[in-house]
Length: 394
Image (cartoon, rainbow, N blue to C red; front, side):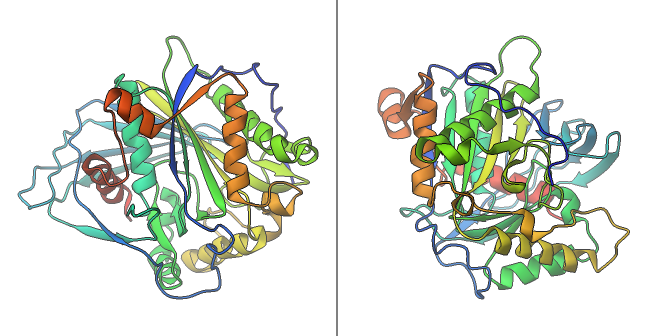
């Protein structure tokens, strides 16, 4: 059920988009076959070594806000020393703060103090797209790196469209459940890569039928209302659905769907069945607002996958706080009268943004004009992925 509705505002009523945005796409092939929820074995594709690590400046603050009951803050202070390993160096000063605002439980605070550990090299297996190899955290690391570059004025605002062939991205609280390691190992044996993502929240599946949409924007002077950014992306998604399926778009509502995975105030649903969740992450000079949009495949099967994770990870302890997933609350747009494939939705989201007067510039064209080039395989991105994996690993 929808606990409380939030209006998806009319175009132009929320924060405006920039006149020019660069388009980055990292989409998996064949969304009709990617979600192998009953399968076994490792995901097919290339292998990438995630080397270490980005040195950060003391005092830099990054903020993450997820749709939901704002107010929960998790602080992670990480202190490390420079390592002497071949591929890994963590140089970190105590006092760097990262703040995460999550849906629900206002006022709760968790503190984690960790020591950096240089010298570990990790490998992630995933199916590559057009020869690009990457791990579960590489798309998140790419956006983290791109966001820093946009904040520094090195790149224009961006739209990032991506998917991953088979994985489950966990929230930090998920990773702390008593049998989380066992539950993650079970997913890995079935061919689903697992990782703890830096934006908090709760577990979500990733596959080629789920399109991730991120707007990466510089901060503007003055106070920002993060609800405006949620509304901006929600309205763009509604407009994208309307390109091919206007009747379905007219039925979209925003509001937390009880029983869905990773529930939040800006869940998007049709008929009480969730197909999209929205989150946001802020850096000092830029931020991104991110949506995962379930386009094709079975919502029920995805819900069963995440419910199974929690059943194992919790060890059956009903006193623990974790989402009680009811698979029937999840659906794909294709099951709700919307677009039938990721390709159709991706084309529609481009049209929706262009329809607001935005020039979408392909990343290849930006590279020709300015020499700015950022790809999944870039060392900076792989280093950022390493940071995320070490920082948020259980």
